Length: 600
Image (cartoon, rainbow, N blue to C red; front, side):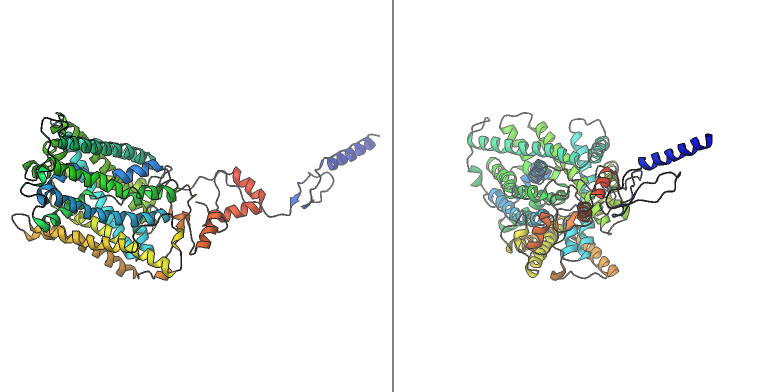
């Protein structure tokens, strides 16, 4: 009896177990199970699921972040050209060439700046990457030019950083003469590092407000200068154009005077190419970069040409303060200060010292940003040590920033021991690097336009088209060589004459050529043929500012397919396509914090 009950119970249990098994869904294969054995789940016959890696740590970040808003780019483009040279050194241009001569010189250099900026804008809007023109050089000219241009540009900014920090310490001594200047330089350097460690949005926000102050100062200066000239403010009668009819006006020293001003004007416009570097971290660069570039003409006209015009109206060309302020960096006799004081503002010197401090802070921050991003881009391209290309979770190239900061510490040595032989030599190397950068941008743009034509690609794919093509870059090259000649001529006019002064000016040229031909010899590079130039554009919807976001196309139809999502980009679109064909993979991918897919 007991045996029968046990047998019945066992049979019931087996039947219950069989009944409890889930019904196989279509496409599943049921695995035979012996009575009394543990039930087995059905085996799927569809495509295998991707292995989950939920516990795997995320890989180190390799991309910057697109966090620069449109207003950041607009203000960087507008205020990026405004430096201490305009506030302090602009008076020397009136003394050297007269009011109209200085105006003509600034207009000519302004034409150069306009063509360089619009050429770079066309490239940066189409290919907004952090390497900017150093990356473009490898695409459209020669990898050796990319190497030379990248290191030249990094050295240009990294060496200017300690120079600006030293100037900031001296400016602060105007108010606190008992505190050593190096203390102020150290405090400012620490502040800049903290701002840049916060991410590119920290740089963008700080530069936005610093540039806003610089712009406001110039607008106020122009308004007060016109009022002083008309006799509406201050104790002096109306001046009108009287200062344009005295000896030395409107032209002073003829063509030679204008030629001398070329060099001063060029240094005043330095940094206009920075907007091309920031495009690599801009939100929606195909829209924001063209908007910023279109402001180029107006900022040149307003901030430089009109400012020089007002100075020439209000201050005589033979006023000794014009040269003294430039030679001695004396803010108390700077043309902006004199105009403020003649308008009745007794605190003009303090006001201008504060504005100049803001300009130095802005220049220092820009130097730190440009140098670190250029170094990062070169590392990613294999033209610098690999570790310099690594970025943290905020998209900051921390190692490149650290190396740039170490170079910035040279400012302490220059303040404590003076600008010795080594520091002066480094500054000499970078003296001509700015114009070499501009000339390279013009050459790159010429090659880019020719490659479009040879490959049959319409310019309609470009989100921004540089005006006056194809003549603009050629005009820029012609004017650029004029400035190079002018630098040597200005050095030869220094009294007493020393051949060393001329050699120092051109030290950067053999340095640039040595890097170019050295890399060319080491890696046997060739000039990229126009047929092989990579005309890829960057996906405008990409959230990151990395070169990996490039979607390659060579014709308008291909570009349209990229924008519509039918053409694959590197890795990312392949994964999306896989998810669309396999909903299970899509479901699991959405639950994972990290996958081993080709997406970075």
